[in-house]
Length: 220
Image 1: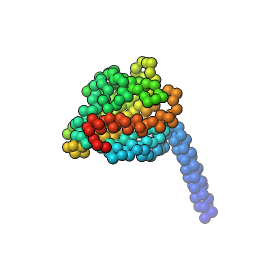
Image 2: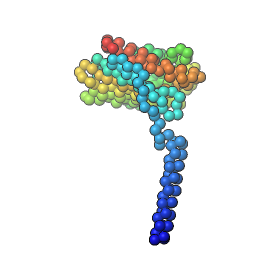
Image 3: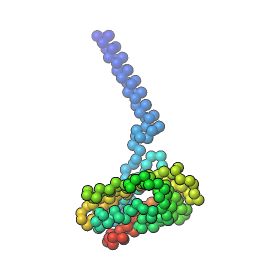
Image 4: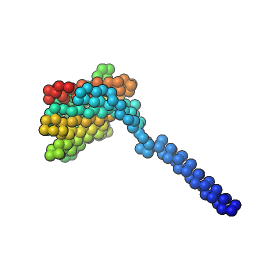
């Protein structure tokens, strides 16, 4: 009986050591590679009025907040889609856009753009290089536009180079209404404190959304 008891104890000791090693390994990997752990906090509602809700959250390895907006618009899907043109022009509802230039035409749905945007005081102008990918399903009333940064492929300019990841999702709700979802995270660069930039995020996006809704004469 004593031999059997010793064998069980030895097995338990080995199991305990393995468990301890595994936990330590997992913690180390989580620190080295945030993908193994929860890298994003929950969304916090920052603004709500009728058809507009805006949220922010912290994300791993960035001092800048990520922002999300959900908007309901009293306009058909195809009319909303028309406001997201893919030519070399600023979208009319983004007033801070100064210029857009097509750098590369990969396909009708995939392009690379260079854009310059003015920023709210006290920030100076910023320039961006975007890899743009569009997916439009007219029959389903769905469209997605994904913009990701490609900052290294275009020469430096007099502007402060920023990088931004943006996803726009357009959905038909009925023959006369649509929804728009925007998720955006931007690294603005420069020396302006991230805390100041974060404090301007909600109002800045809200202004853009209201400009968009005015194009359809929505009563928000």
